[in-house]
Length: 298
Image (cartoon, rainbow, N blue to C red; front, side, top):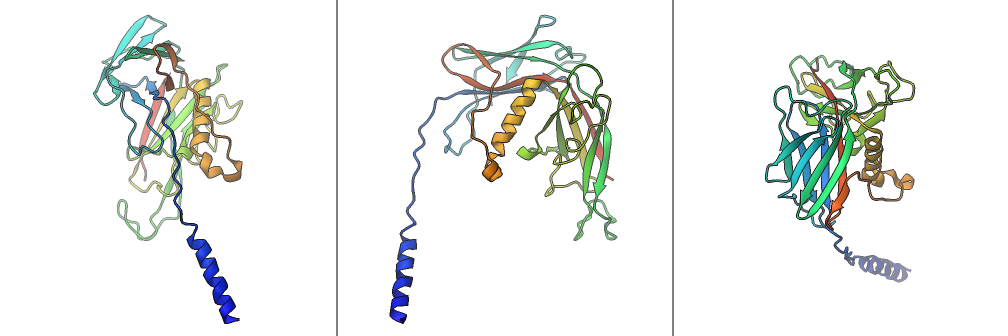
């Protein structure tokens, strides 16, 4: 019996040992596309349009910057043109001057890009946004040893913000993208992409933003706020098409985590239109109003 058992054990080990072959997947290179990342706002900070090109799936390198492009923004409402300056790394920058009128609510804008015989454009209207009024926090119980700023105790007190803001009343359907920051660092995980219509639900005109959009997943359980951290919220206005784009983008970025509920992978939509040349472009353009508020957690 021992001989038979040893035979079967040896056979099983041989089978498992034979399953170690490495299978190489040959993914052919696709056409190189221009990628446009153009989310502009009406703040006084420098505005950036990021241009890159696509790279092979397994290249394991940063996407190449697109150099030598001409980037302009036309205000179609008052017939003004603003030229963006290249920084040599794929970023095209416009720095607003004092009392600059580049980005105004209700104005319609056209982004124009040309490079290597290719031309593209995209359209967006600058919609209104609401004000960030402040924060309230839920927190863990206070640790008796937590007497110093950011005390490194075994169980430091953690804080999770609830953003206070009012959905703007009126006949216009408003869309918002709320971004959260801890000490100036953006909470940028796909599940924290927080775009929504109105105050989070229909018929919320004039009412405070509601959970989940004002509270759930806007910060991270593994990177919470502590005492004396700086909490910041930006509420950026978007249009309905941009809202749809962000939802589709989030679905594709989190698809692998959904298991049996995963959807069929698909190309993310784009509002970049081609007018000349052979090289196609993808990406998105939105110009919106932004309101921000920062607060030290106490």
